[in-house]
Amino acid sequence: MKKRISIILGLVLVIFLACKQATVAPEPLNIQNIAPVPSKEYSFTENPVWADEFNQAGLPDDKIWSYDVGGSGWGNNELQYYTKADLDNAHVENGILTIEAKKESFEGKSYTSARLVTKGKKDFLFGRIEVRAKLPAGRGNWPAIWTLASQSEYGQAYWPDNGEIDIMEHVGYDPGVVHSTVHTKSFNHVINTQKAGITQVPDFDQVFHVYRIDWTPEYIKAFIDGKEYFTFQNTRVGWEDWPFDKKQHLLLNIAVGGNWGGQKGVDDSIFPSKMLIDYVRVYGLK
Image 1 (cartoon, rainbow, N blue to C red):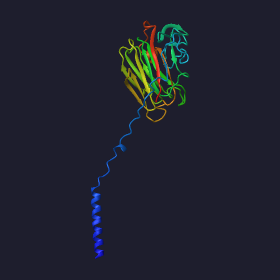
Image 2 (spheres, rainbow, N blue to C red):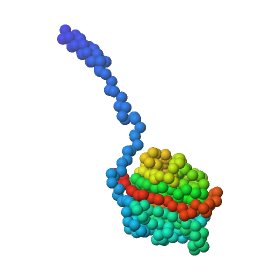
Image 3 (tube, rainbow, N blue to C red):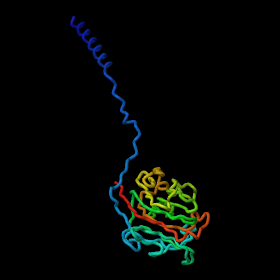
Image 4 (cartoon, helix red, strand yellow):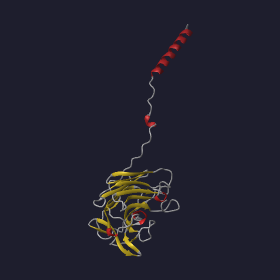
């Protein structure tokens, strides 16, 4: 009799447990574990880590700016001679830096201009770079706001292996079309693989605009007056695609003629030709 009771109780217990298991709801799917990882959000310091507001009249501040000097053509068959610390080609007045290209004979060249650089004085790694500028008009002008590597640590050639970021380029024969371009060993104009953005700025020579890049470990983005028009992503393939994990420096210049700027000749009636710069501000990456 006791044996029968034990068997019956055992069967009841099995049936009870089976029913209880059947009523337990399955665990919800953890969607978070299968969703793609979002891109990291980057932000920048509220105040510049360095800036030049051009409040000091005369030559540009020599604690910030140096000069590339010469008439070698600069790899582009340019026609100008870049002078050093010459008020005729670069000077500050009334809170504005003026870079001026002139039609004059100097050191075997028919034009003079200036190319200001921050190399060795204000090098930076990542950040937001803003330059408020008014550009010159006229066929033969080639103004640029750009960066180059401050060291040569990749590949066999300084350029393009170590990278170039063009914040703004404008060629006078194509007025109102502004370019932002990235050059690396894999992506450059010599092999016609450069990565670039193009936008229209019809009043480029009439009013000031803010030309800007945001440079982070994952991307470089270009803006005009806060409006984004170009993005270059870090492919994470190697330095040949992305050498932009080393310091760069800023350059400001007007070239005359050259492989690109001089494709349709130079109109000598446009000189003197001036690029006006209200400020340069560099914000740090948080």
